[in-house]
Every structure is written in C-alpha cells, then in structure tokens.
Amino acid sequence: MTSWGALYYAFPVLLGPITADTGWSATAAVGAFSLGAIVSALAGVVVGRLIDRHGPRPVMTAGSVVGVLGLVGVACAPTLPWFYLAWAVAGVGQAATFYPPAFAAITGWFGADRLRPLTTVTLVAGFASTVFAPLTALLVDHLTWRVSYLVLALVLAVVTVPLHAVFLRVPWTPTAPPSDAPADAARSVIRSGRFVALASVLALAGFGLYAATINLVGLLVSRGASLGLASVGLGLIGAGQVGGRLVFSAIARRTGPGARVGVIAGVGGLLVVAVGVLPGPLWLVIAVAVLAGACRGMHTLLQASVVADRWGTASFGRVNGWFTAPTTVAVALAPAGGVLVAEVVGGFPLGFVVLGVLAVLAGLVAFRA
Image (cartoon, rainbow, N blue to C red):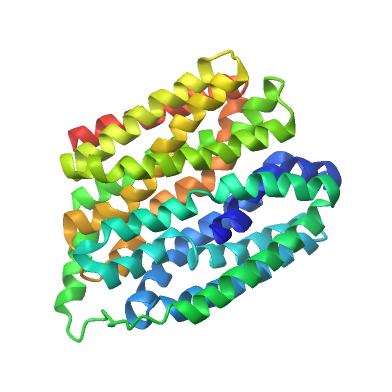
C-alpha cells in the first residue's frame, strides 16, 4: 500500500503543482512518470528471475531503498532531464516493490493455496489511492510539491524498508533449474501464441482501465470539481478496487482464464464509457468511476493468477515477469496516453469513451482467443 501510494498515486495529485511551479508542460511531466513505469516493466523481467533464485527478501528490500532514492531525486530535480532520470530510478524501485514481486513471493510460498493470500495483499494495497491521494493533497496544501515528495520518501523508507528486511524471512526454495528442461519449458510457454495473445489482451484492457481511472482527477476538474473533491474521487477508486477483489474469487470459481478476462475487461470498459458520457451530477460520475475501479482491481488479480492457472507455477517469477511486462508498459503509458487521447478527441469526456471502447475490444478478443 505504501509503495503504490508514494511511488504511483501521489503523482496525479501533484501534477498540477509541479507544472505550475516549474513551467514544464503536463505532457512533459507525465512523460517522466511514464518513463519510470516503462523502466519498471523492463526491470521486472530481471526482478522475476532474481526472486526465483534468491527469494523476495533481498530483492524487495533493495527495491524499497532504490524507490526512496528515486523519490528524493524527483523532489530535488533542478531540470526536466534530471526529473526524467529520477523517475527512471524510481521505476527500478517500482519493479521490486509493486505487485509482480509480491505475486511471485506468494505463489512460491503458497502454491495451490495462493488465491486467498493474493486477494489479501491486493485488498490491502487497494487502499493505496484511498489513503495517499487525500494525504498528498493535504501535504501540498501546506507544503511545496518538492517537500511533499520528500515527506513521502521518508514515509516510504520508514515503512517499507524495515518491513521487507525483517518480515520476509520465510524459507525460500530457489526455482533456478539445475538442468535445462524447466528453462526450456518456461521458454516454450513464453513463446506460445496463447501466452502472447493473453498478455496482449491484458495490456490493452489495462491501458483503457488505468488511463481512465488515473485521469479521473482531470475529468472531474474539467466538470467543475475542486482539486480536493477530485482527489477524494480518485481515492474512492481504491475502495472500488477493494470491492472488486472481494468478489474475484467467486468469479474465478465459475470461469476459465479467457472468459474471466473477457467479462472483467468488457464490463470495465462499458463503465468507463458511462463515466465519459454522464454529464452529472458529480456524485453519480464518481460512483460509476468507483465501479470501473472495481474492474480495475480485478484486472490486477488477473495478472496475479492467470499465468499459474493456465501454465502452472514452475519458474513463475520468470514467466510472470514476461507476462506482466506488456501490461506494465501499457499502464506506464496510461497517464500520458489518457491525456493525449483527451487532447486529440477534444476533452476528457470523449477521451473516456475511447478508452472504454479499447477495454471492451480487449474483452471481445479474450473471448475469441
């Protein structure tokens, strides 16, 4: 929850103050944030292999330290290039502290009993925006955006470094294969058409759902909401994610991986379209956005469970690292992509319609594949 809150959800709230203070365009600033997430996707492949071999404790502890250094760099960046470099460092921290390493740890520890702990950790982390969006808005009301990020870096250091270092001591059995057979099996999975299709579908759906929900602040402000109310709306998306994850296990028991992806992506896309076309009142727009957030929350559990459900747990860190990389890139492009789509089509309302249609198309492809 703290890693997601400090390294991800604080940025949409601080974007306006950042651009107002520095004179950088919103597109340029969001580009730096997206670069961090792209670095996270690329580094995630390496992180998965390291967890397979060494376990989550050293990898996630080091990732927390790197994340703290990245946020300090963001806060102190004197120029836009330094801002980009700092977010690239923060992206390495994201790769070792966000969902994929946690999913690899839980899958390695719990095996066939993984769904309940996977749901539990995503339920807790689902409150990241609920806690950190209003908290960040409160900080920037009294401090500059730079000092706000320094406070968040301190919170990240105090909470995540000792928790990872002290409590991730459960014995770990390395999954690095002594022979080439498991490695060849993993390579065969990664290169299969169904693996590529499912990874692509989750990436497209993830882009549509994340680009919409992360830009909810922009949509609400464009409709007359204050920054404070818009931040609360973004925070409630987290509550929606938690609700979605609570019902995910019931859906998982009744559907196969492909149908599960299709239903969640399709329904989520339709809800995003509804957010775009509803003229008001604001409470109704926020309520529908919270339901879309529920589908986004279930999308995270799809990332956590589909690989093991379909291909087993052998070399899970490596296989899942490749599987989640396209989605991580899509999510990385989502903040800037959502803004760009809105600019091209003439505003956030129509932009939400386009993003929702993308998620619906992804759901239809999932059914076909």
